[in-house]
Length: 117
Image (cartoon, rainbow, N blue to C red; front, side, top):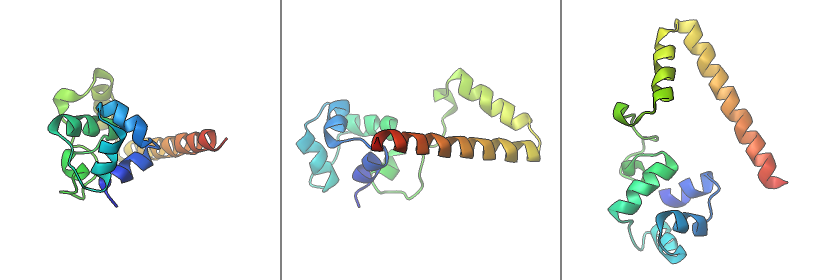
């Protein structure tokens, strides 16, 4: 399956909504998804920001998910979380990771319940 379609469906975004975000037609999104056309550099940058994935992953050039972290692009609160995490001992890091994993799973379940209602 095409990565753009895969990521769009994971985020539960319609082709129409994605076309509006990228400022292109819905037909253009469809063409991206069947690999009839490829996104412009401007669209690739927007796709990276929308999906939180590297451009290489979006284009299928890499199987590694998630954009590499660039310290210069992190917000102040994100840096604070990294600094706090680094001060934790191993059990603290494991507990924090388990908590965040559980919290994210609960958010996903809640969102799925909202969309099916």
